[in-house]
Length: 52
Image 1 (cartoon, rainbow, N blue to C red):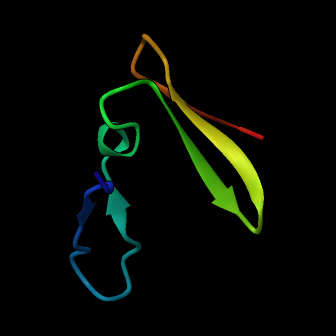
Image 2: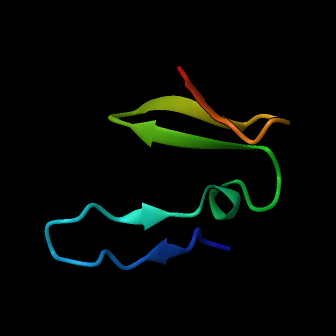
Image 3: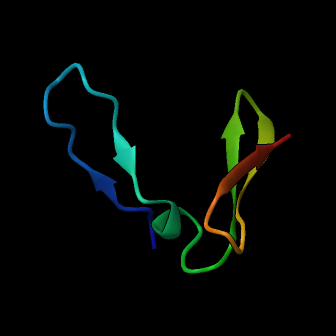
């Protein structure tokens, strides 16, 4: 199931994504930028960590 995107308030605002949707209920998701994978992790404390 694709991640849920919330609509920005104005056209100049960046898109908003729910981290729990990106991880599909888990704690990690892989995000690819220019062919390079990055791991997004939700910690037990509810913080986000992005690593290459």
